[in-house]
Picture 1 (cartoon, rainbow, N blue to C red):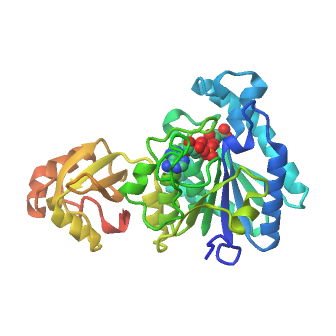
Picture 2: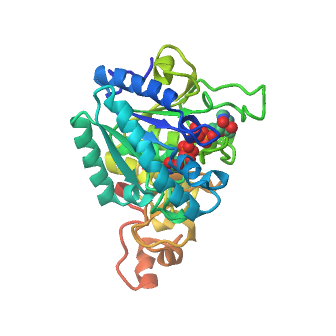
Picture 3: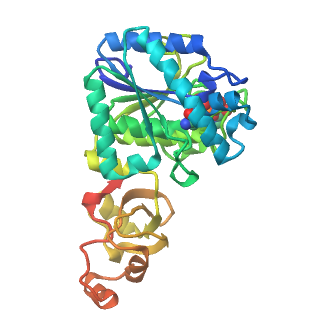
Length: 372
Ligand SMILES: Nc1ncnc2c1ncn2[C@@H]1O[C@H](COP(=O)(O)OP(=O)(O)O)[C@@H](O)[C@H]1O
Ligand SMILES: N[C@@H](CCC(=O)OP(=O)(O)O)C(=O)O
């Protein structure tokens, strides 16, 4: 069953990659975009609410400013190109949507906006209101203010996070490739496409490689898999679909190929936000007993932890890994990294003497933890 129909998916995020929107000379592919907007209008008329995540600002702006390397030679170039290209990009979306009687709204967000809980909830409220009003939000990263440290850098993960914020049931990544292959199909002619993925395990992650993009874009397959992890963990299905043809959504709906990642069971909103956060500040390794306890819904106690890596403050997001180094959970640290390192392996009654203050109930409390 197609999980992206208006009935099964009242809210759908469509992400459009740079390489689809802008041709190699840096010109906007307006006719193709018009055909995608026709698809969006059709779905909107069927009752589905669409959120667009559109790349392309840097590539478009670079052409207008005559910048080398598609505007990606330096962060300053990329920021200037993004500021220049974004205004043209959003103008074009607004005009084409208007041609179908639809109103566009622009939202530019940084990684920080969605990693901070309060700002994330703000973005959620804005998206909710726009969708209720029947508007089509067109979203991009706010590249002209984001520095390297606070950038998504690719729009795949941004699309997944936006889907989560908007409580979307589906995310479609339109790309220059028609799905996930067992090996990079641009290098291996005999690569086979994977039709459906129910679990993103190590084998699947390895298929995405190190994440080199095909050209103008920045994410490659690795960022699409990370997007799939975030979206499915938040209860949304995600598809990687080719956008190389006119009317790509209609084509996909009528049997066109792609890779569908099925949704996990919907977790509680706060836990799914924790699991989807990108800025992991450190790691705590745990023994087999603690790993079992976490899987059974328990908090992480210091006694079950073995090592601490990275520098984090209380409240920062950390990853919990098993004795083989496999990430098993993410959660908010109850101690900073220095104190956590001092108490790993220690029982509760020994901790107060070590720290000099009353111990908290856990290293990571189960209410602030999401299993991966
Ligand atoms: N296992 C794989 N399956 C499919 N594509 C892959 C794989 N590994 C690497 N790729 C590369 O990822 C590219 C898609 O990513 P990208 O160019 O960033 O797309 P977009 O601009 O649409 O976001 C493909 O063209 C291909 O070169
Ligand atoms: N925010 C950037 C797009 C980032 C990017 O290249 O994303 P993608 O094409 O999805 O790999 C822009 O508008 O140019």
